[in-house]
Image (tube, rainbow, N blue to C red):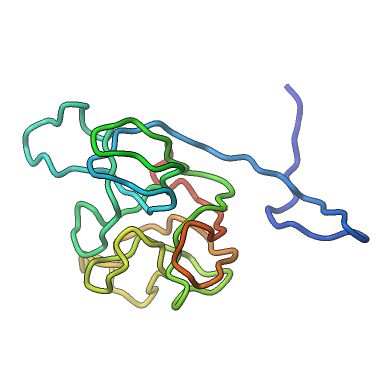
Length: 170
């Protein structure tokens, strides 16, 4: 086994036209979409089956993250492709992601991000976490951050750059 050192995850320029630190370790998982997902959507586990086990088992389905509902508030990653409802698709859960949908009107580089919510019309987007929210309130105080914001151009499209933290340890 060899030892590997990852010196940060940012890209820095050395000289003219040469970049260093192009480390792109990522973690992708394959899951079933509980609803139609677009590339870049923030996703969470889909526990909408109630007490009846879903066709694909518990923890194998994902849907757009919605912070307004306790069972769908914890984002686990970002859809890496368009996935139709009931189909298997790729979800990026860890490492560098350059196709995340970010609420560009609210997020700034370096902020911790969580899944958006329907009240703010940000379901499926990554939004900054409100660190003043009380734990146990069922809202943002109970969510783990899913990503660190790196860059976005403010258009809420699947071109934002984040570093995913794999909060579900998948």
